[in-house]
Image (tube, rainbow, N blue to C red):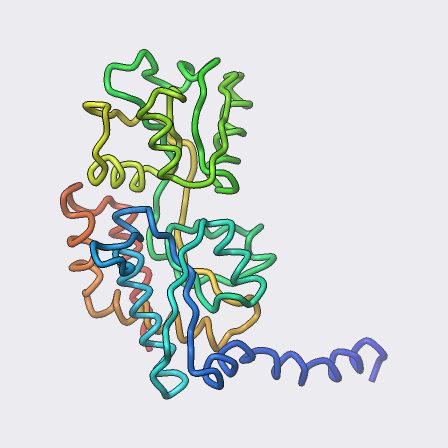
Length: 281
């Protein structure tokens, strides 16, 4: 046996032992920590009783049930609200076992965390007050645009504006609530974020601005998924098995209708996702 093969053979048992480390830890502790977004309706937010609710949360609860089935015991579930960058950091550092919200799966992020099946497909957009002189991306030249710091939208928007020679001024902020409030007060002329999240905020938030408009501009492709420990196939399998069951059973149609029915029927890309996630046992 060559030296290289010998090293691989010695490391293989260690890799197998590490593979289920997070799931074993969850079982031993009897608890599961879930980081979630608490202000991104209709995906993930706090209801009137302060409890997590929304499209992502319903699917996340199915994953929690699947993990409990995998470890063979009921777990004490702790929900911790945090921003997208902080949720990913918590998972990467082992401070959260799972994160649920509006997190875009990217290859760069997979350097640090693992991801479940895709649960939603969206794209970034730009929100402006109705009647604004800004009617397309070129109108952002010289204008201030609020965007949540550390999100994929921030980077994609920077790239798009640079590529098109548009000198928009990005104003990174801590969270979506702050960004929307700044746009409502006129401190910025636009607010960039994932389109479904922007629509959800408009429909659920009282503002001074009478009405809002989404610019007709596709800035990015955003596949949402749930982050978890990287390199733990047992945990990922438990999550994917639970999600596939939701899609296979057709329950996803009810969940989608409950949170997005007011926006109309699912777009073709979402209908395709419903089919692709019907993975058989």
